[in-house]
Length: 190
Image 1 (cartoon, one colour):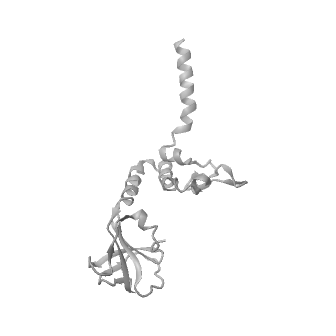
Image 2: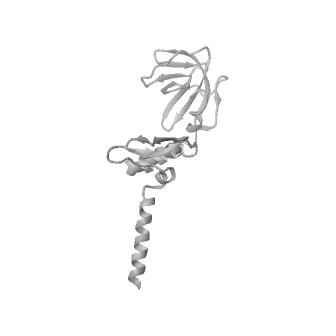
Image 3: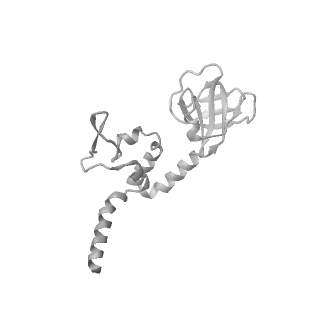
């Protein structure tokens, strides 16, 4: 009799094991590995059969991509399935980006030779190679720290910068209390 219960219990465990060992983020978002040909399953969305989206060998259901509440977990789920040993690092980075950071609303006085001069007298040197388009008179921007890198958002773009001169207080600088995630959703950044 004990053997029968052991066999029944073992078969129940085996049947459930296929449902839950992807990981908490992958399970919550429905992420799964693509097949050996790199293909994902198809789902019906609005009457059309569409394949799920393949990102780095991980299939992301299109319904997940459309769900605003699940979007923050997609990257974590991809890391969980492709590089699980680094998941704790990515979780920590996301935690830091969701906490308030040093940030100010500023105005740009000029941009020349990869240097932003702010109206308050601060000077920031752009360190990335991205193109900076037209900057209007006293263009509004956000100057903030993204973990260990200073950035400046202006005209929908974010630039990595080094601080050459920082005038922390001035009539044209307003401190803001926001996380990096919130800042990157503000008009100056998007």
